[in-house]
Length: 105
Image 1 (cartoon, rainbow, N blue to C red):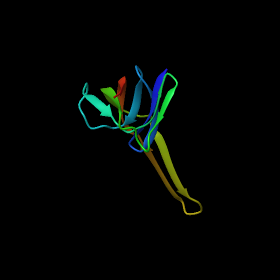
Image 2 (cartoon, rainbow, N blue to C red):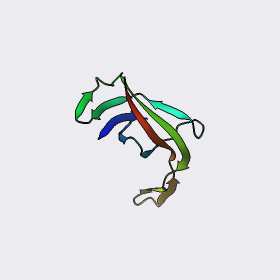
Image 3 (tube, rainbow, N blue to C red):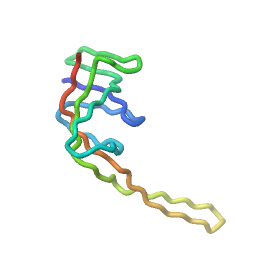
Image 4 (tube, rainbow, N blue to C red):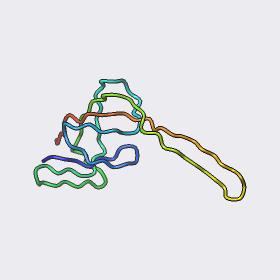
């Protein structure tokens, strides 16, 4: 089993080939190829490579499938004894990426 741990937009993801993941919005067109180069760890059939902080020899190729919005989150703020209430909704802008290949050079 080949997998990698990648940092994207300040968050870390466990990534395997052939699966899709939802990242924060990446401003590119649909169907375009992207390369993820902030690889922190790579496990290739039991051989583990750890970056300091990143692995320069590992690239991950992906394809943008769609842009979407996440589930609605309710933000409710209330100050006790002040009759102040504020209710807001938030939907995070996401990009769905299909991981095609993990390349070790």
